[in-house]
Length: 69
Image (cartoon, rainbow, N blue to C red; front, side, top):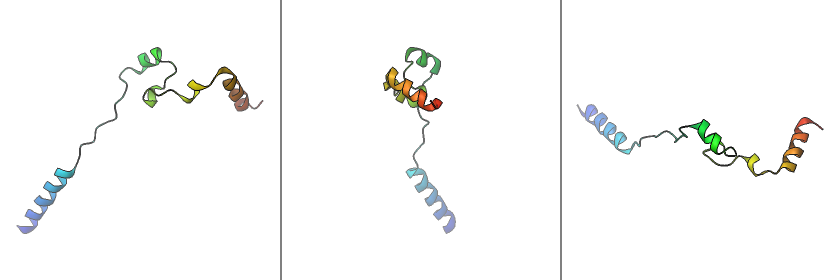
């Protein structure tokens, strides 16, 4: 009986200190979000993508470097 009481006490203590885990909030309509905010990243929680801050000259230079010219 003593082992059972110890087990119950351990179970009650573990349940009192356990916190529920919630899923990360997601954008409900990713297509609609991408339509209205084309420069933001849907998977990054709406933060702008690294490419959003680059100007056309920098993008051309990066594309040339990636293409091997």
